[in-house]
Length: 262
Ligand SMILES: NC(=O)CCC(=O)C(=O)O
View 1 (cartoon, rainbow, N blue to C red):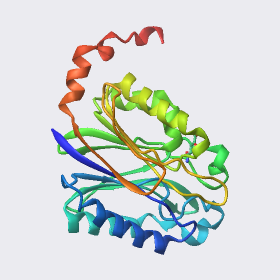
View 2 (view 1 turned 90 degrees about the vertical axis):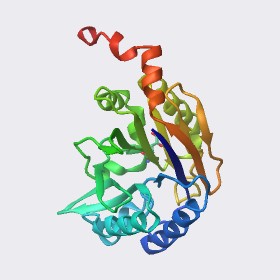
View 3 (view 1 turned 60 degrees about the vertical axis):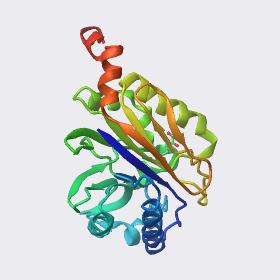
């Protein structure tokens, strides 16, 4: 099954959700003016607030309700699936870094709370970690979502691909000084799991970091189909999920595993 992907590599206004909602609206329209028309649009991590973690009590989205409604409306309007990056959400007294995905009919596909919190950016001081997978189906195929630092945990990818996941969406605010880690880890995760990796990173800077951009769409052989620069842009490529089966047959890594020794 072929799918046209559009990653919205965008800047984010620190601690200003209203401006960011407006910006995403403009960017989704722009992505839908690209040919071929996208089947799936992907947004970056924490796109409503950036890493303004100290002000979450006033800016986090309560239960993600506002963002879910916003994404559902956009998805229906443009008839496109949206892997809606992640946003800061509030549940009872806790805050999470939550990925939200909706289908083109405006149905909620998935909510995933980031599992691995990134201490270097203070996430552990403000956020709670999720404890469940971010799996969902697109047109009957298994896919999943992960958030930024999650890519440093090969076990987390494997836990998904062992059940047949064919594409993993990674949403990120990955800083520029570690861009080589970003590129290398994403390719490694695609090669070892023989799956598509679709990674959308932000650009611009906040008070603490400059971000790398370089969003990437990587095939199950590890070829980079498309990569972004450090500027705002829409990074597009067409993926073919049957390619996953072909690569997995050519080098049958999943059959050759020896889990009894690991
Ligand atoms: N937002 C993040 O999780 C950043 C992860 C990161 O920069 C890393 O090096 O890992």
